[in-house]
Length: 314
Image 1 (cartoon, one colour):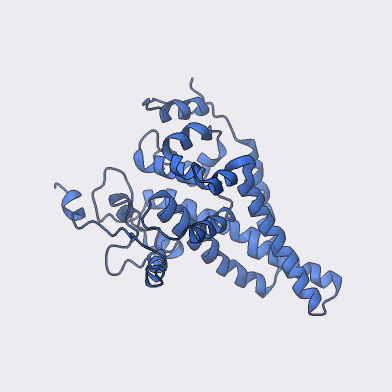
Image 2 (cartoon, rainbow, N blue to C red):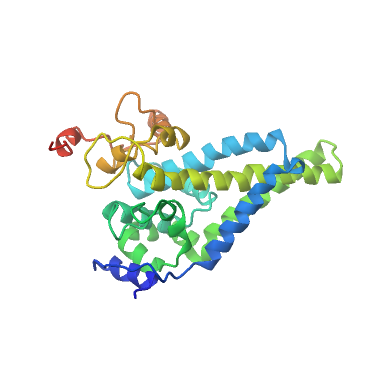
């Protein structure tokens, strides 16, 4: 019987393994962490933690940290090098991304590049071929050794001193938690400076923390994970790629263009995921805006040969 940790390490070295998944090495830190953060997010259902400011911060935070951080920076910039930008802008986007608590840049990039290499095959880290739950978040609950993954798939990221620092001793997590503290502190201070009492200031700070930081983190988690799960199960296909990727309009709307997943698998490097005129891709529009400002260059567009390359032989 093969444990998952050693299986992933060996498969990273190129071996094709017929893995058995009956004895998993569970990542207890992730299991406890996900459980605690989901429970903390559930505090949003209690009236004491409610504020309209918190709701507004939830909505805007999904865009700032999810779209600008995860979609634009982690995914299209760092993973696929769909465009280039000034280093300060890249680092700013990566900082926003780590505040979404989805691990370090090198870890995120390595796993996603591996997903594309083995999409919906045995070595795919998060294919729904195993199960829908596995693709959504089950894969996050097992132990893997980062070192061989990063060595093979994200050496370019790890060579950068800033990303190497984020990876070292989980500094990325310290940055994320510091942002949570900042949410409470700023909310508390804003209420206190406006003349609110100490209990009212604490209540407002807590509402900003719960809605703007914790619940927002959980929402962005599930939006990101739904691309791994939902868009490999339900939707339509523009291209007959060898995997089971799908375009899902609902996920595309909720995750700002990431749901046009079959298009993305057909042309991974393209900065534009919506290929039809009606396939709205908000993340692409952000990149277009950066182009207009002169901040995004070397932008990769969909290949004109895609239809011929992935034409259905039937």
